[in-house]
Amino acid sequence: MDANRRGLEKIVSASNQFSAEKGLRTFAEGVITQIASLIGVAPEGVVCAASEESTSPHLPGDFRVIAAAGDFRDLIQQRLQDIDNPAIIGPLMQSLESHSSVIQPRSITLYFRKSEDEGFAAYIASSTPIRHVDEELLQIFCTNIALWAKNIDLVSELRRDAFVDRQLSLPNRTALVYELNERIQAGREKGQCLVVLNLDQFAAVNDVLGHDHGDALLRKVAKRLREGLPPDTYIARLSGDSFAVVGSCDAVHSDSVQACFATPFVIHEARQPVSACLGIVRLGTPNASGIEYIKDAFVALKRAKSQGLGSAVEFSQDIGLQVRERSHLLRDLRMALDESQLFLTYQPQVELATGRVVGAEALLRWRRDDGYLVPPDRFIPVAEQSGLIVGMGSWLLQIALLALQRFRAAGFPNMHMAVNVSPVQLRQTGFLAVVQEALRQTQSEASALEIEITESVAVGGLEPVIDILTRLREMGSTVAIDDFGTGYSSLSYLERLPADRLKIDRSFVQSLERDDHGSRIARTIIALGRELGLTILAEGVENETVGRLVTALGCAEAQGYHYGRPMSEEQFLEWLQVHQKGIA
Image 1 (cartoon, one colour):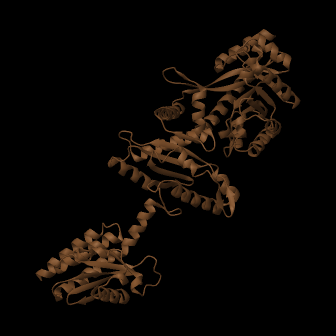
Image 2 (cartoon, one colour):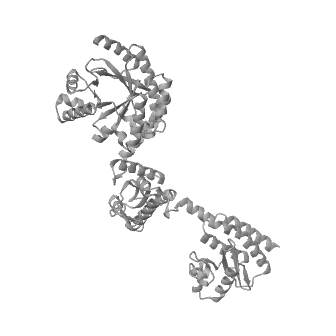
Image 3 (cartoon, one colour):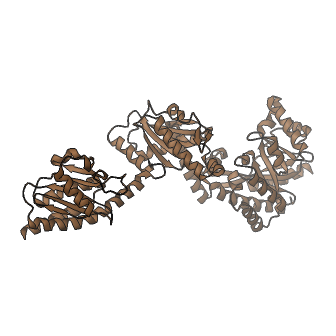
């Protein structure tokens, strides 16, 4: 009874231990130790299971030693048929084929059933005969521990899912974080580099050639990285078409990674050139973590993507500082929305022939609580990249149209309100509904609204933009192309976009007074716009001389400090009254 009690306590203890095991080999080694402990012998034995490549095990060669201890340690990973010891082969084969335990006078072979058709056997040698009480305990042990054996594969499977990308059989992002942290803790990160790469235009490949083609390309890229970089390079797949490589900076750098893309990939018997952008980080920053290194690499990658196909950027303190500043700016901008720090100013648009005010442009401004005015060219790009511009744009539209109603009620019934719309807003689902709702709530006519767009709407395809602008004009609103000549200008772009007004950028307008190279561009744009039947508005007219020049060249309208600066609603109303008296 004492032997039974002690044995059962060991079985309970073994069960608790096995619940924490993370793999079959570790589990099997524990089985040897626990069996030996139960029968009071030295932990000497082997554990055999079917080889992974075996489909229907029935011969000794279909089984392999997965764990070994004591005098048998040299047998680890050997095939059962290669073991020259009949005393071991006999009971192991009998147990594995019959799916049952085999107890002999001086050895015991326990069978652990993982499933109906699969299991493994543990052989333990004993210098003394096995006692009857030990046989009973071992059967209890076998039954109890077999329950844990069934979970080993599941735990291993879950672990693979947690750390391995199944599609490409590469470590995933979680595994990369773990690997970087391991190197940091071991002090092995000095002189190491992390490169995060993203394939250029992969989404287009998927859309045009199909996901099967895209998946095949990803597999080829993984293979090329493994073969093209040193064997000790750590390669992971982060997501989609993003990969990461870690290794010595002497071996893992822009040139060595880009060399993997130097020759086209052969996909389905077709040659396909592929390029990739790289974000590079040198490891070794004090107190940095794996997560931070990956984040910095993606920051550098984003900068590389903005520079064009096949670009590479190494992360630096300056880049990090810029990112932190943008992050703080975005945080403050969110607060500014909630705390009403954003407001509109209005700049008049004047008809050159008569001096009459034909419209006003609504301009978004941000004044912090301390009175500092944040320049629009700093916060507008942040708002666009973060998506805040969508909500800001809806708010701006309503406020501007309400102001226009008050301008009209003050005696200027023919004015229109020009509102800048970013490409992000224009491509937003439901943009037309937002415009219609703003017109309805402010009781404004569609003809009172002019939508100003920049040439950057051409990025991402013109067809959706053309459709939206066409529908806006069908509603009665007008469309103006702002800052023409500074971005993605092309004659076909100008001809295809449905527009009513062309605004010449201030840089070209001001060059007219200097009569430099820019003045020729201004003259060309004016002539081109008139040929296309567009009303030409000159921006940045700051003095009477430039006003006369743009009038002589054929501009119908102008906007600039010479006529009026951007003003608050109250100041604009006062300016309107004074200006009207001046031209009466």
